Image (cartoon, rainbow, N blue to C red; front, side):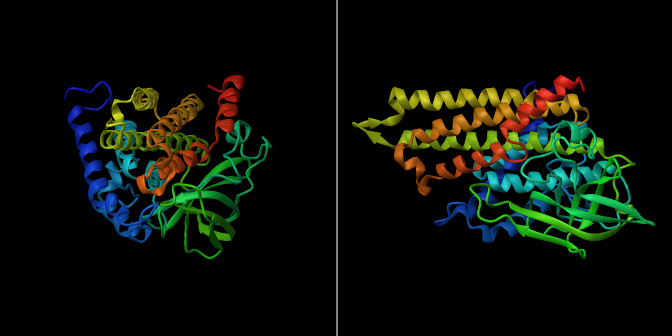
Length: 393
């Protein structure tokens, strides 16, 4: 089949993923915004996410479900690259970044379990990733060795006791769907990384909602604590050192967030063009005003640059610090470009852009949260510098 240069996958497959995402966004995501809900009627969300599993958009470790292989960050991601998942996420995010974030978080955790190819003590459907401690991911020294103070070692530990492990610690800002069955938990095992599947309802697992948030409100975000949680040895999904799974988790997470930001920016441009074509000032449509033209055209140029940056990751894979650096740079660059694009599109609405009626303030809130989630610009810059400085490529 002929390859589509922009995507790195055949044009027919790209069109399939795009159409699937558009149909899901139209039939399942858009209806939650009927009525006066600034972030959508979130009471309808569980049903809409269930549909995502049924049609194969949502990835899951359960091989009996459609999305196991070709869902967002399903097992086929290693073979097909980032583009199928990126296309799905960005198109869904045009309608709602929070729903896209739910599907993305589900996919990242599922990918780690699918990658391990190990026999698990149970097969979850909905999973969340427990990785971050505190307000930012670990810095380079701790990524390489979880016992390093750089600036703080990993405090979540898994201690082997006979054939089992005892997990203690806490994880912050765990994004997930509602009612997860299990968590993929990174912990320190002696001086190495370990990665474990822990049942969400298991004794000693406590989760607490982080509270009212600025954006991405469709996605659950919890702090999760583990108090002497005993799990079987089969729950460990790495082969003795989960370092490569750490790299994989961070790389996929940042890549997907960049895709969501692009979708939010595209949704902003679509809304801005529609508004400019319908709004009149001085007897003519405002789309004919030079200032409006420059705002929208400038935003679309920024989005084109963001897409080029993200699509350059196709074929890089999710292993090694070299690729981690590229993923960090992509998130840093794409978030900056897309946040500027959203702001420019919002300006076409004038003061109305900050009202809930047009959905632009939601897009601004969502992209702002994405910019700092799972690695702020300051963190990403330091990580990029340190990887280059240490020559850890």
